[in-house]
Structures are given as C-alpha cells and as structure tokens.
Length: 256
Length: 361
Image 1 (cartoon, one colour):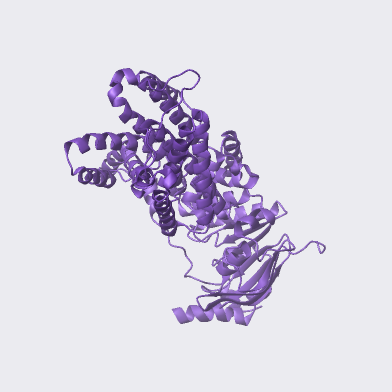
Image 2: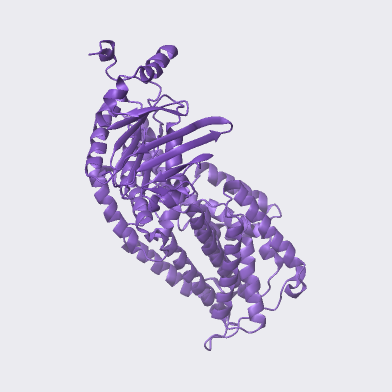
C-alpha cells in the first residue's frame, strides 16, 4: 500500500471568509483506502476543509492533492470525474421536484457522460435501470417513485449517498452523515457506510458530531479547532488526549 | 398525494395511448382548421401557433433550467429579419427558415458566452440589455429599413405549392411549428433535458455530480434561441412585414406571460397560455382600450389560485380534496410532513466513554 499515492493531501491551506480565518495553515495526509473522521466543535473548519477538497472553495494559500494530483485549480465539477471525488452535504442536497429514481438517474447520466445527449431518449431509460440497482443497495426502492421532497431527512441523506455512489468515487466526502437521524437511522447509516467502505477501493472522509458514530467507524481521526488541525491519530490515542477533552468537555461546560 | 408533473418528470415512461390519441386529434384539427374557422380568421391562428412555438422555446429556459432570459425577442427578431432578407432574394422556404434558425442560434450562442458567468437577476438584466441594444441598433440600420422595417415579404412557391392560398400558408406554418415542438419535446425529455432540470432543482448538487452547469445553461440558451428564430422566421412569412417591434422588449415579455398562465412545469403549459392569451388579446383589443388591465387581473387571479399555472388545476383540486380529508381526521400526507425541516443535532457535542475517562485505566 505504501506505493500508492495518498488519497488526500492538504498542504498549508489558508482560507479566509470576509476576513475570518476558516482554515489557518491546515495540512493533512490521508492514505488511500482509509476511513477517516474529522471532528471538532462548530466553526472548527470541518465543512470548509471539505469544501476545499471538493472544489467548492479555492484556498487563498496552499495546495490540495487528491490521488496524487494537484487539484487546487481544478473546478469542482471537473474534480468529480478527474480524480473521483463525490460528496454528500450536511443538509442533504437533492433535486426536490424529481422522483427519487430520477435523482439517481441524473447522477448516472452525469457520471457516464450521456448527459450531453439532447436527442436520444434511451440513455435515460438505461440510467433508470442503473438507478434502481443503487436504490436497492440503499433500500430506497419503496420510495423510488415519490418526489424527493417528500422524503424524511434520513432518507434524503441516503438518497444523496446513493447519488454519490453511482459516480463510482474513489474519495467519498460525507459531511455529518447522521445529522438529524433517529437512533435507528443512525445505526443503519453506520452499517451502510461500513458496508460501502469494506467493498474496497474507496477512501471515506466524514465529519460527525456523534462521537459514538466516529468511534464505531473511523480508523483514524483528525481533530480540528478554530481553523487548525489539533492532532491526528487512532481513535484510542485521540480519546486519551487532554487537549481534545479540553475542547469538548471544557466548551460543553462553558455552554451549559 | 398527487405530484405535479414537471417537464421531464415522465421521462422514464414510454408514451401511452392517450398521448397518441391527443396528438392525432391535434393533427386532424390542424388539417381541418382552415375549413372550420374560415380564411379571414386564419391569420390570427397562424400567429397563435407561432406564439405556441415561441413560448415553448422560452420555457426550455424558464421551466427547463430556471434560466430567466428577458431578451428572447432578440432571437425572434433575428429570425424574422433573416427570413425577410432571404425572401427578398427569393430563397426557397426551407433554406430561408434554416437561415433564421442559424442566425438566431448564433446570436444566442454569442449572448450566452457574454453572459457566461451571470445567473439569476444579473442574467435577466444582461439579456434584456443585450436585446434592447440590438433593437436600438436595428432601428438605425438603413438597409434593414429602420423603424419601418422590411415590407412586402412573400412566400416563394415550394414544390409547386402556391402560398397565396391562405390554407397552404397555414399548413406550412403548422408543419414547421410541429417540427419545432417535436424538437423541444425531445430535448426536454432527453438526458440533456433531465440534466437541465437537475440544474434547475439544485445547481450546487448538479455541479458536484460533475455537471458543468454554465455550459449546460449556454447550450440550452442556444437551443432556445434557435426555436425563437424559427418562430420569428415563420412570423415574417405570415405577417409579410417585419418591423423592429419584433425585437422590442415587449416581444420578450409576452411569451413569459403565456408560460406563467399555462404553467412552466408542463410541456404543454406555454402552448395553453399562448392560445389563451392570443385569443384574449384578439377579443379584448376590439372590445376595450383597457385590455392590458384585464390581462393583468387575469394573470394575477391565475397565479394566486394556481401558482403553477392553468394546467395545475387538477393538482390544485385534488390537493383541496385531500386537505379536506385530512381535516376530517385522517393522517396528513407525507409530502407536507417532509417539508418541515428537521433540525440537525449539531449543538450537542459529547465524547463517548466520558465516564470511562474519569477513571482512566
């Protein structure tokens, strides 16, 4: 595995929003095939980091490498196919007026390049068959024909994961995959992510506030605070660190 | 819960028998129309089906991709002037109409490149400004006839068919509009159309699926420009005079009113709106000078009762029906509960095994 390039390498990234330092000289290396969690309190810069890796934000300074390629100046939509980045958002982004099946079909035709065809209708039928297979994997078949806006928050998140998966990503970014879910939905989503990841060939990065989820899933953790990387390491090591406990427990007491 | 059918929402199904029957009826009506309405009313109906095509082309933008162009008159007018010039050189009809489509499409492509980075209101204002600039330019160009435009456009005979016969001109008009409508149906129901719809629903999500949203918007804009050009070209033949009015901003606004009336989420919405508005204008302009007031009131009433346009009437009625049933005790529909945003549980932060850490091993 040591010969493979890292899945993600962030080198000295600085990102400001209207003067506020969202990311302050962040560096991070994530080996290919890892299931890696980014944790930290609100405003730590986790979502901004995801945005920088996915191409939503261009860093003010520093570079971003995905699968051994410098993608810093590559537009978000090109990164999807160039290096295989797929992304799910904190609040699931779906196509609300389309049916669940059509949501996934839109991802299928975007991925296989048939989206450009403006005369032939057939690629769309093929895409709906592929979409059904993805919906089957995520047990969304019963709602396949319903408009996506009618889904529960948990189902929306799973729909978004289904859309990400048909892109056949090598790097999957999940921003709070269990936010807004019931305990049952959370448990199912943890199993789902583990299942997807264990098929191999996929690096998964996720942010998460539910520490049970993080410790259940992640091989490695990175702790962020106020735009900095505090530390990276295995869950057991991180759990024992005083500065990490300070951030969580100290703040929690302060807020209470 | 009944869902409104958006343009392209039925894409994954094969055409069914009722659709075929409906198209057959339209075809039979089109053939019999000159006999049914008489030749004096034919001019009105010729311009109406042109409006149907124009409004449908505009709806590829508004309904298909939520691309708010307020400058489609530029491409309509470009098509009309192209045919006027071609007719004065006695070009055959198919070639003249092809010229109209190409000129309008090229102009639309250039416009889409100029407006490449703009979206939303900025895009709307830019398209309006570009179209008005073209209007101002054309009224000052002497070889295009200035304010007077180009009169005396005649339709050269095609394969022995003489278009001085009003019925024949109607058939030419209807066949060309039908071809245009077919093209737009295919585009809206193609993978491209589906992708355009996805950009309408959430451009950020579409971009993170790998879609180059600016390029798709530009291509849609060019295709819509071609459709507007064909409509404008046909209008030149039917009207026999082309004036700068065909480039004026009101010409951009009329199809927008039509598609709002009919419903932008339906393929046939703009067509229904076009027929209704044309008929109303035809009647009201003879009856009163305050016709714009009545059109405005009608639009207001339709949009308040049926925000998705006249074609959403069945949905509105069935929603009222089901709401009545909910009020009488049954469970509320999934769609309504689904609309309630579920707060994310991001405020509560706790490390697992906190108790363990108080007694480290």
